[in-house]
Image 1: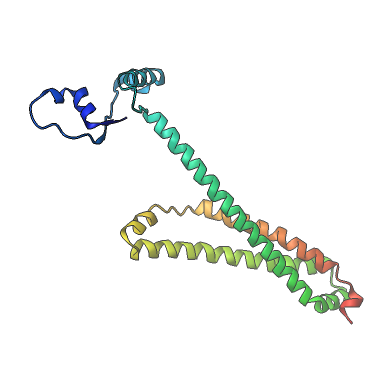
Image 2: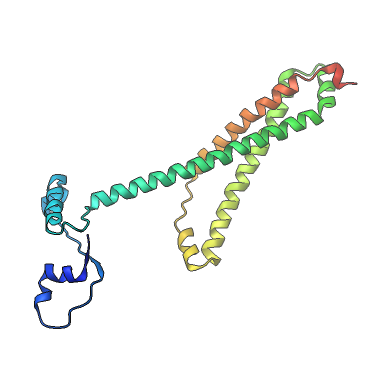
Length: 208
């Protein structure tokens, strides 16, 4: 709880002693509870209420309330970053689909020739899916390696604040592998759109 220094002196009886009275300033009192009471939410709530009754004009919060506030703030930040990442991921998948569609459009004649020669449709669709897989896997790999090198560079040559923040970065191989697999799966979904376009190419029009 935050109290002016003069009230803190009154609570601790230092204001009755001799000496210069320190002007008001913001300060806090930390109350520690030991024993079984420290693990009893009801007891902690009653202690907080008793302290609040003695200083009705100031705020009294328990450690569990602070922890709950921190969890809420962390949840808000996590939701924000997930939303931001989702937007970036959606744009990336859309861009990949457009790139593959453009490659199919530019290779219409080649696709028409292969289909006229009797190449199975699954081979043509497989080529498109393979291109999407290679693009997504290489992009994800470069992103992971680039991110790791960037964090290491900031931790080595950044300012003290930047080095401290970079030291908090955690590289979990399992989580990174899950992210890469998710990106590859989404890229395959984007490749399906281009594969369908390749299979719909009219052989006669493509050979003109």
